[in-house]
Structures are given as C-alpha cells and as structure tokens.
Length: 155
Ligand SMILES: *C1O[C@H](CO)[C@@H](O)[C@H](O)[C@H]1NC(C)=O
Ligand SMILES: *[C@@H]1O[C@H](CO)[C@@H](O)[C@H](O)[C@H]1NC(C)=O
Ligand SMILES: *[C@@H]1O[C@H](CO)[C@@H](O)[C@H](O)[C@H]1NC(C)=O
Ligand SMILES: *[C@@H]1O[C@H](CO)[C@@H](O)[C@H](O)[C@H]1NC(C)=O
Ligand SMILES: *[C@@H]1O[C@H](CO)[C@@H](O)[C@H](O)[C@H]1NC(C)=O
Image 1 (cartoon, protein in one colour):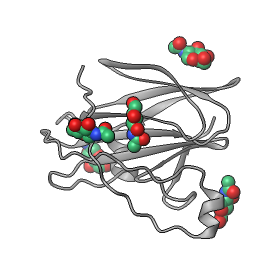
Image 2 (cartoon, helix red, strand yellow):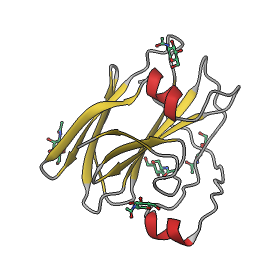
Image 3 (cartoon, rainbow, N blue to C red):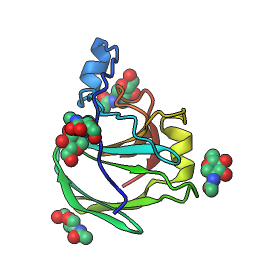
C-alpha cells in the first residue's frame, strides 16, 4: 500500500467573471498541498464528476485498489502517492455512467508531465480530471471550463 493521503490547505485564488460562473459548476477547491518529501515527486490526483448523474469510478494500480466509488455531481475522488524514481508509477481507472463505460490510465509519466503541475523542488504536484458528458479532461487546477483543460478521452 504505497498510497497515503496527506492534505494541507492551499488557497487557490481564481479570478472569475460572469461567463465562467454560468459555465463552471465546480467551485475551486482548497487543495491540501503538504510538502511531503519523496525520492521523486509527491502527487495528488483528483477526479471530479461534472455530470448531473452519479458515476462510478474504480481506480487501481499494480499494487493498490481504491475500490469502486460513486461520485455525485461536483464530488471528487482523490489520492496521493510518491512517484517511483523509475517513473513507472501507473494508475488506471474504469468509469461507469449509466450504460456508458470508459477505461484508461489516469496517471502515468507522460500525461502527468504534459498536462499536470510541473516539477518543482519540494513542491507537491497535482493532476485534475474533469468528467463531463462529452468526455474526460485533464488539467492542473479546477479552472472555469474550458480554460486549462485538455480533452484526452471519450466515453
Ligand atoms: C492536510 O494534510 C495534513 C498532513 O497530512 C493532515 O494532517 C490534515 O488533516 C490534512 N487536512 C485536510 C483538510 O485533509
Ligand atoms: C463554456 O463556454 C465556452 C466558451 O466561452 C463554450 O465553448 C462552451 O461550450 C461552454 N460550455 C458549457 C457547458 O456551457
Ligand atoms: C479528497 O477526498 C476526500 C475524501 O476521500 C475529501 O474529504 C476531500 O475533501 C477531497 N479533497 C478535495 C480538495 O476535495
Ligand atoms: C462498479 O460500479 C458500477 C456501477 O454500479 C458497476 O456497473 C460496475 O460493474 C462496478 N465495477 C466493479 C468492478 O465492481
Ligand atoms: C517521463 O516523461 C518525460 C517527459 O515526457 C520523458 O522525458 C521521460 O523519458 C519519461 N521517462 C520514462 C521512464 O518514461
């Protein structure tokens, strides 16, 4: 069990305007970003449901199973871990929304370096998934959609 959850408060200040309020249903969270020291990066991955139906999310890795969780609208699942120095840390997930399903890697070396918060000495890193009716988006923060989000998968 290498996933331990550590949380710290970090006030995320996002300027909003009227268009973003009508366009974003999820309020910016206060991410807990403890400066936990790892050999390499310390990560927290968040998966937010932005679909009005409940969805089920089942996250697993080679040696960890976070279970089948149900997320209502705006709810999130999150977990934290030290990235292996081999950079081979991999988490994958099954998603269920009514009759639709999806299955893909929710954390790997390549997508985390491309779309998540960049490496910085002794600073925790973060990936945020946004689950929408039209697919799955990855970003660094809960910013007003579609700013900062990259669509990576369909249902
Ligand atoms: C934030 O992380 C710290 C360190 O792990 C923990 O003690 C604290 O309870 C966390 N706070 C929240 C709100 O999760
Ligand atoms: C949010 O706004 C953008 C442009 O401002 C638009 O392209 C997009 O379709 C909107 N999304 C929703 C869910 O209304
Ligand atoms: C992360 O998940 C826990 C429950 O596992 C929840 O209490 C916490 O609020 C979540 N963090 C954020 C930033 O929403
Ligand atoms: C997880 O929950 C969904 C929805 O209830 C279900 O369709 C799916 O079979 C479950 N998956 C597992 C592995 O239990
Ligand atoms: C990890 O990703 C970085 C940046 O995309 C890449 O340069 C490096 O070769 C990758 N390492 C492994 C072990 O996949």
